[in-house]
Length: 369
Image 1 (cartoon, rainbow, N blue to C red):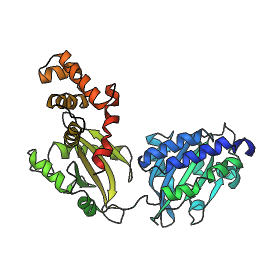
Image 2: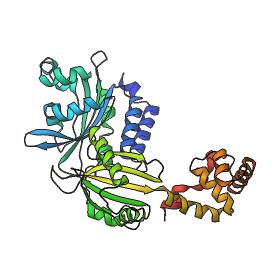
Image 3: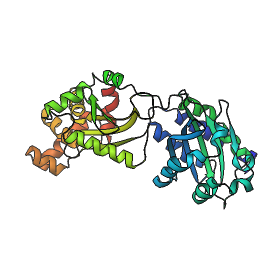
């Protein structure tokens, strides 16, 4: 592809849109990375890609975390555990200056193809040719790398494609500047003390319970779980922690779960209690959806002048009940349920169930206070 074709007005507009989406912090960082991979592939063809965050330990390099497209879990595990220290691009990218290069131009390809790293990892993975770019992070122990790859049955990357990827480099520095900051558990507990719907607990790397905020403690007590370390919720958290470990996920990634027959939504991530490689912990959040729902229903019943019965119908509807289930739960006929729904739709000025959450402005109403 020629430079003239690559840098068209429409393509530059696409680049600007991709950059804008990278900065959209209303979206989880991991989702923004996934979106970036997909959008960039519409401009520059590649078969695999990754954001790699790594750290130097003596003369060797170790993976901190990695986000990929078209890598499977086993490939990520092998890179992190067996091949990161062999990666021949990391020492070149380990610089305070901006570095971007084509591997097909930088390396002597005949020499590189004979290396153990190429033969055992790059060749089986189809990572024969790549564009590599680094970016800085405020956490001085971490370095960031973005890479896109092609296999040997595709054309090598061209200099104009390198130039296009280079446009994103300063924006990577801005978007990821706070990546990998250590979580102060005590401060997190304090910050979340006044959020009645958010409980936060912490487990160490051996899955021992080591602390929680007041909301977590109160919820457990109110539901008869005197032992904070051994109850259905803490055991569910431990199961999610183990699942996170098995997946190979490390600091910065999370796993979510909606408990069955419970209004709790759980989220688990890994962080650090303090500096050092042996201080991993699991941060476990629960969101009490019933509390949020009750507060929301109370607000909208006033905003839209809903009757008590209409609030009951809407509450069940938002919890996923069908008209038949609402009818049997409230001991009313299905025509009566439909009549209440018609009244709710009229008062809320909507035409279908699909529009309800849009009309409620759920997050604006609740989380802006």
